[in-house]
Length: 530
Ligand code: ADP
Image (cartoon, rainbow, N blue to C red; front, side):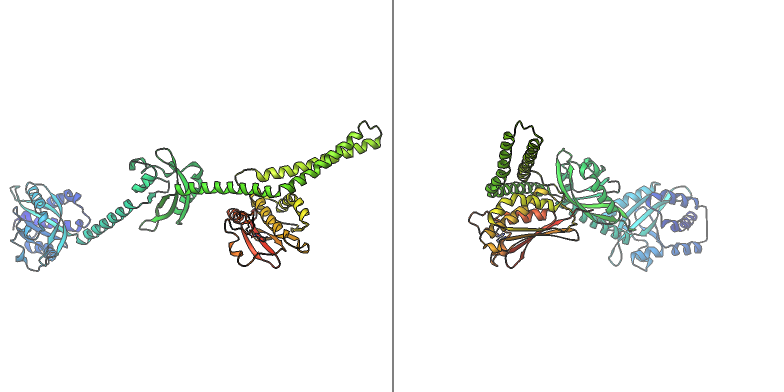
């Protein structure tokens, strides 16, 4: 046995302990180690023991590929217990054909004095394919001529198949994400976008990933949503899921409405490594919502005008009263013009005060009307419900007198303020009271009563409008809130459906409650939070 060979094998066996953690980039170190140990010359038995005890496959091969020597770990990998089945035979006989060319190159490289690393598949004696990783170095004789290739080979089948499986899973996932019609994105705690699929890029009108990936998500979120988005990100990095609707500035400059559902992405240790968000385009839905809202506002406005039309003659009468009073007071004042006695001057002053009072009353009615018909965007505000009821009663006063209705209003002495839009709430109550008046019109005088009662429970105010008229038949009740349902010859049938829509949009509700005799509608409104 060549002395150099023994030294090399010893060095290789010693190296094996290190090779567990060695990668191909450590070949240089293996080579140095082997060369460094070349001077050792242990006896053949000692070598054989080390060679066979090595946990990794060690083989010696000639330039044409013939295996000259192989240890037990090598035979194990080949799934044979017989040396002669492989020693003296070509390595190419047990190597999958697709790796032959590369392995030949590696062999040439080693015999030219280089080192090599390669991964390939072996076909064992049982016909099984098995992935191996081999580090090959040249062996020199005393004339510094390469006479063999020494390879230390590891079974990496499990690791390779696991990597392949992971790769396949990753590819599958990437294909799903890439073909997903909704935006899938990942960003870190600071908001830096780590990944975004093509659907996401097109939501931002970005024609390349570079204009989005690596940028901060806060560059795209519109200013008015930044605080809410930061809160969402904070929640997700604290382990919670969150969602929101917001607008973004696209790469090309326009704005777009998005809805995002975000969840934490955990690493192997269970720490939140990124925010994963699925985001969809809700631009069309939002613009439809806006259109619908403005149509509803328009409709509500038309209804207010129509209600006012119904009350017009009564209101004219209501206005006429202070105007008549003003004119007759003014006439009296003219007669007293030039008065000198204290008594007469006092009379003039009293008349002038009455004129001022009546003018204030008339302008109060006009202001109430103007507020009621004004087109305005609904705005929640603190509303004192008893004041609101007083204003409505004023508007309905002449109609009440005409019909001879006994009107009672009960409001607790201490009551919370409502958090609603003033005009819209006025509209609901006016509609309920007007409906009740119309029902009462058909009723004998004894039942011409209307009671409005206000109660409070938890965080809501409840306003009941109860009349004692003919009531609502069982057939009509299911249709009360259906748009355009009416039993009146001149009715439009949108009062109740519109009122319910307004109540719900304000966070309240409007329901019908059976009453005998008559009908009762209950409006619930949110209270102002203290
Ligand atoms: P309209 O008043 O134009 O008919 P509404 O939506 O306000 O439209 O009312 C729908 C229907 O509900 C009315 O036609 C009527 O049949 C019924 N209704 C509403 N309020 C009362 C009430 N207080 N008493 C009896 N019927 C009522």
